[in-house]
Structures are given as structure tokens and as C-alpha cells.
Length: 223
Image (cartoon, rainbow, N blue to C red; front, side, top):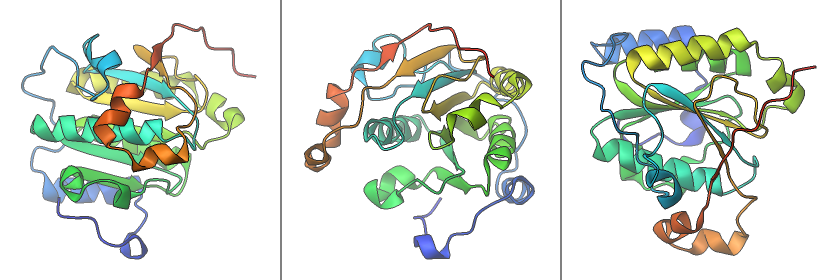
């Protein structure tokens, strides 16, 4: 994709509008990948990449504060890795939280940014994108969704997304403020927010300081 337009010129996108856009732009929309690489998707984080990166054909959950800079740095690493691998990436953003101006323009040329009016449409958009063979990486940012609402998402939604990712060989990363995705193959917990002064440092140096923690914490039952 070309550089993103100014924020004021961008429109929120419903799943139906997204489906029409993808069908017109990508002829292979909806088909599964012809060949799925066995290795995981690199992230730029040594602690994750040493263990194989994010698994392809599966859901990974990243739990981190909504205001933390770590998730943004991880996204930058993922976008760079997916672009280097020749794949496209999609970000589903129901809270209009993504700031494209904080990323190098070259990193965004293969990114489709989907701004949805609400979390339900965000889940529907993620389901559509995960099934599209053009996307090797789909990120669903639910960090600003309150915990009660996050817990109310039916397990069947996550099961459907897991099956879609497995079928298409897509890497799906769901970002949440609390662990809540029962179908995640990999769960990562990112430390609290980086200090403001850290934002002035080089991204590669900051990425090396992040230490995600793998966890097998059992999710509490939704109330």
C-alpha cells in the first residue's frame, strides 16, 4: 500500500466494506496459503525469536498495558519482519489507537489498517482477514476493551478464529490488557510501560530490552 493519508482523511471501515475492498484489490482473497513456512514469524524481540517467533497458523495473545510502549515496539518489529518476508499485514483497531506517524513510512507500505466502530465489528473484520491468503500477519488490538466486555466474548468466537488461522496458515496476534483468549497457542506478558525518555532511543535498542514472559496461566472463568 502507499503511505497512509492524514488521520482526518481516513474512514472507519465495516466488515462489508473491508470485504469489498479486499475482493477488488487482491485477486486471491479468501484462498488459503499454498505453502506455509514451518518456522514462526520473527518479531525482532530476542526473547521470542530464540524460541521460534510467533507461531504461524495459530493465535498468540500478548497481554500488556494499553498505554505501554512495548506493544508498539513489538508491532514495529513484526511489521518489519513481515515486510522482509514478502507478506502483507493487517491491524484491526476498534479504538483508533494506532499512530502511524510513529513508524517509518516504509514499514507501513504493506499494512492494511482497519478502524472498526466497535469490538464486534473488529472481531468480524479479524475473522475475514485471517482467512485471506494475502495476509501473513493479522493483529487485533483489544487492549482498551474493558475486562468485563473482554470476558463476555464467547469462546466460540476465539475457536472460529483459531480454526481460520490454522486453515490459512496466518499468524494472528491478539493484544489484550488481561489474559482472555482461551484458544491462544502462545501467551506472552509484556512488562509495564516504558519510561517516556525511552521513546527517544533507537527502536532496535529498545526491542532488545523487552523481555516478554511466556505464561500458561489458566484463565479465570468469565462471570
